[in-house]
Image (cartoon, rainbow, N blue to C red; front, side, top):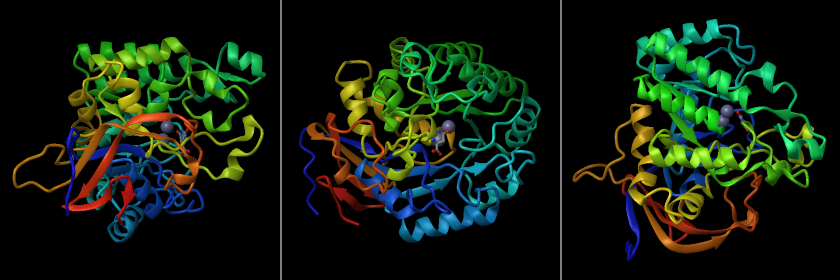
Amino acid sequence: IIIDAKDCYVCPGLLDMHVHLREPGYEYKEDIESGTRAAAMGGFTAVACMPNTNPVADTAAVINHIIERSARLGAVRVYPIGALTKGSLGKELTEMADLKAAGAVALSDDGQPVMDAGMMYRVMQYAGMLGLTVVSHCEDLSLAAGGSMNEGAVATMLGLKGIPNVAEEVMVARDILLAESTGCALHLAHISTAGSVRLVRQAKARGVRVTAEATPHHFSLTEEAVLGYNTNAKVNPPLRRQEDVAAVQEGLRDGTIDVIATDHAPHAYHEKDVEFPYAPNGLIGLETAVGLVFSQLVQPGILTVPKAIAKLCSNPRKILNLPGGQLIPGGVADITIIDPELSEVVDPAKLQSKSKNTPFVRWKLTGLPTLTMVAGQPVMQARRLLK
Ligand code: DOR
Ligand code: ZN
Ligand code: ZN
């Protein structure tokens, strides 16, 4: 093969540590094959997938199933994240040691029942002993109750019930205290508010084992994306105000936020084609992430290229205790090449994901992956899938 990398960045393979592949159980939204093809188009050589499948990834059998299917059908590497609690009730802890032995790279409540403090405390004691990172979705349901977008002027204007920033922040604060008390490594998924960024910054300053991620939609969009009742901008946590977006960008810049991950959450057209309060939360992110990082963070000078790549590559691998994330002589050739000048307009018809629920339709993104190579084999080259 001939690879043209003139004026491009050659990077270790990118890893998205927060995707919903929907398999098993919700294959009409996405499956391992379509989701990993979307990842390959997006420049990711690996993804970590969340456990809110059906059945839930709460046993070694389901983890094994995901690993086997991914080895057979996946265009890129797939690392499953196990559930912290069994099933969809959230009353009983999973056999975490079994999940770890089967290959779970972390444990999470994302998309799963929210736990009370006592449950999370026991979870962290157990996961901490096993050396597994706990990935927390950080939402207080009593504060979020029934809201379908960010609380504030836009929600009032649209007549929608809102979710206040503090619904996230009380859980960020709680989980930081529990991690500090137990010594467990805590990773905060998709933080979205200025208050959350401040809490993480303070916790890191006193040495708590906490890391955090932000999504491309939370550093690129405000609550105004919901105007017109756009259900493709309905996501949990919700899109926030401009001052929150600015704080997330500053958290990325100063290192408070370690990781950029997409929370790729595919939903079928008919599910989003309902009145706003009834639409499910979530938007797809794999195929627009690199373009948004370059267009929204690198070009305006918020992140240097090495810092941006670390947040998509080595930082998530450290959190999940995975090797790689560096280009080493003799190492496995998982490589992503990014052309910082290449532009494309987002067109849902051209996306690999089964679902097309993106609020970035018609956005012109500059800075795109031009090669995704997994174990020495190109899976995407020159914006075309090879698998
Ligand atoms: O917007 C979201 N979608 N937030 C979540 O926590 C879950 C996810 C999903 O599974 O659709
Ligand atoms: Zn979540
Ligand atoms: Zn999620």
